[in-house]
Image 1 (cartoon, rainbow, N blue to C red):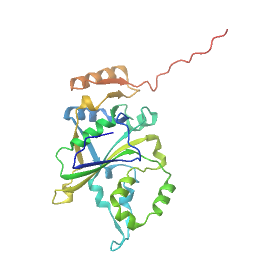
Image 2 (cartoon, helix red, strand yellow):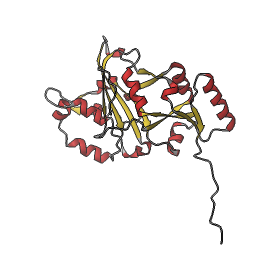
Image 3 (tube, rainbow, N blue to C red):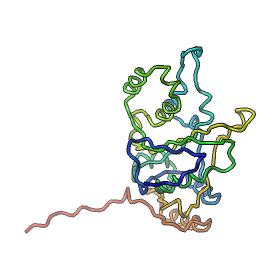
Image 4 (cartoon, rainbow, N blue to C red):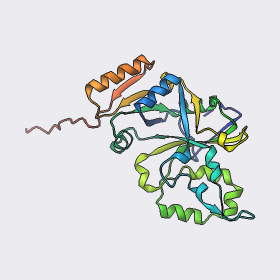
Length: 261
């Protein structure tokens, strides 16, 4: 399948097989953040070092003693590594309870081709001259399997093939998180035009047209009728004209049984 490309943006896929353009992807976000996305017409990618799981960026937190490098980490690379997480799972009780514990988050639905189009347009106001981007599903090995995998890789191999190993590692997460069914977009900013690492941004923003990028918005299934109606009206007022719904995850439909002859 042919894709438009930007010469400053290199996109690869975390799979031997290419993904279909129309794969549906979902993301739960707080309602106030969705309002900002719609009003500003941009999507934010965050430094991955801000993610809560202590095993995120595990390769960059590890020590190396290769060549003249003695007990060194590559932690500084975390300052130019950004990410955004989606899920391939349309409906999940666990995700609603984790990411919408106040019942005030929504699930946006988009498509892979919309994400690729966004990425190829490039970010807004960035110090980076080029980008290395990896897209794909996360794998969930047990911690013992993860440690065994890397115990077989030499420090020389890690350093000599650093970019591949780094991006590979960002698609590995411990098995305890496999309910998330994550689909990640990882961005590595290259060749920043800065004087100090402190000038690197915490977020990078990509422009979107919300009514094209967002296929639908689903409200928390526990949300009451009045709040649901009010929130839909707010979305319309700030310019969203796409599909809205409330999931029926917790709706009970009485069973029907075979009638006696």
